[in-house]
Picture 1 (cartoon, rainbow, N blue to C red):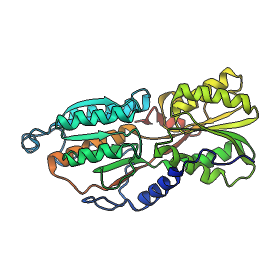
Picture 2: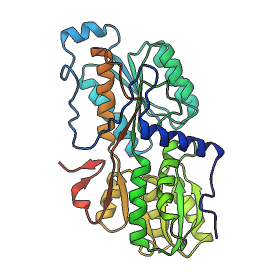
Picture 3: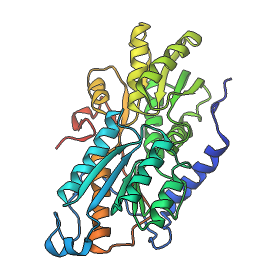
Picture 4: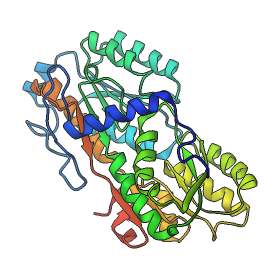
Length: 352
């Protein structure tokens, strides 16, 4: 029988232990409070103390720190474009000058962005990291310069660097996805898994959540597991390669929707799109439509707009109102999306 966790890294186990503990306790960093604050879709995004745009008194209190940087891991993925642009637009609504930076999934480019932001004395950074470990030093440099950093979607492996981290509850989301996977695929069959970036904790949280359910069924065998870096084109290539070695699979679990669409393209080209079920994660527009069209079996809806707006509002609370007692880890609820409830969803969120 094939190994159920073939692509384990030594660091991933420690990473996931840390994540599990942090989500359970929401332990605060220095100056941050402990708590189990949780954000869910449908909660009003306009919860800033003192209201919306900056008033005269608020502008005076902020002084020269009316610039916010939005640093995103990559803008080569529609989900992250929505995340970055929503954060930017909400910060602008609140009265700030905003610059959006694209790190192109490159830690060196990310470091250069932080150099520029620190030198230009921005007031705050809304940050989607490229690497859970590699991004820690950048956040600490900003903290040392007196610039608060609010991580969104992706976390860093530090509890005393970022001011707060807003993170989708990836593990729980993939527990639910795993349950639905078993319902749809059955208790026997071969499947493959496309992992995201190995340096991103989201990759392992999703994989661990999924396997916590699926691995209970000995008849379900993972015959291949390989990274495709959350990238649609790489997923197409990896899936094509997997199909050459494994022509008897029943399903593919993808760590995000971009990879799910790449896998679908590969299956379509091989004439197997009607035979093999595809499961994704994100709630992107193309996958939501593909579920409605019967091409993709299910995904898990994250809420990038909600996380992005909240991060901008938290930065405003910090700069304008002097708030400091943010929980260190703030989980954001996610939802399973399938043919059974597809009418409730649109791309990147629920229908109004």
